[in-house]
Length: 507
Image (tube, rainbow, N blue to C red):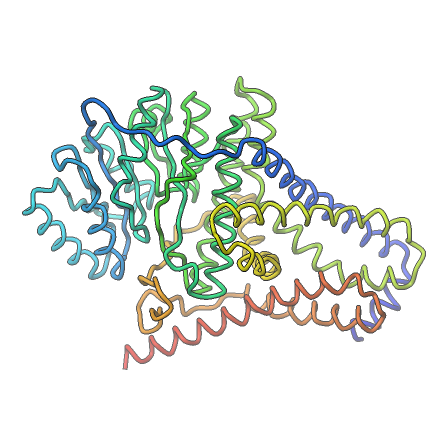
């Protein structure tokens, strides 16, 4: 029995099944509308609080700063990282660099040589090795903190290239208020123009930093340390309970514990820390899975504490949106599945009032569009050109729904998984290539098969919508199809290329 026959004969002739589809679709859209409409709140506050930050300068005696560099098998980027950190303009006697190296490959030898060279130049740089990766990144940061001599702790992941004036731009803010525990900078993208994949990632991250982080900070909501490109007051880390590894997002976890303890955070939208975006889709999937699952784990851990805390109700409500926003992915997936039978129900008629009411939910997409429009306009002179990517960005969000929904359910049901770091290949310009490099993920899992099946299913929805002249359904069906097709095809393509490379290297 074909899908078309099933929907015409089984679905439409069964009023209970029809009602179930309508109720489920309404619930999915209600959840998506709630989070999408929250974009209007961000847009409102952004327009109300838009202003440039005042540039501050350090006065008095400079404090000791420790820069922590957590590493695991970063063969291609570790030299760039250490060189850029040691180029930061700050007195050598006041700067300590901890290379927290959990590597198991040649990265260890590269780090050892670099550390030795910089020590001869008078830098206080240490190569810190642990017997195992206990606690992963959180464990490494915690171990380094035990011997760190700095009053302030800056952290950079391996894919970052901090600017020379990073400490000059960030440190002065700590001396405005002794309760400031963190200063976070905006991520800048070294390779945003490399491919469609990196361009859409840049759009997503710009929305987070330019709109979410900046607005939340200015209006007094909780924000999060982004794991890198920021600097902590050491006392704040210790007072909040130190780094903990019971979630995959140790940065988000510590952020909430610190702010619930009364520490204030400062976000600097006009100060940037350049970084490399993942250029290979399976590595990006791994990163998105970790971020999504970790956020859900942190929500399970910290939301009870948020609601028990003596803080304003508006902060509790906003924190709930902040910590649970990844819950939308299963509902994006559900809406995509129900779009097809819904089109058959609409074509048959009899539910005109329902569909008229459902059209209101389109307003949420307008909120998302304005959200990203303003973030692009704030950062790029050519923002109009970049905004043409918005449909592709929306399709990509839908295409990642299977991968990220899996992460949501694993986080909700407490399934533990390994901290899988995102491989970096030193991709900065279009002439660079991640091919012929190690660390490439060559294994595909069942998620790709589901994405392929959903691409076929949504293509059937596009054809059916055109056949029945349900033109209003075509754009959403098309976005889902393009999203699942793009993500699954790119996953297979990149995995095949990685497998061929691995076979060639072993030959």
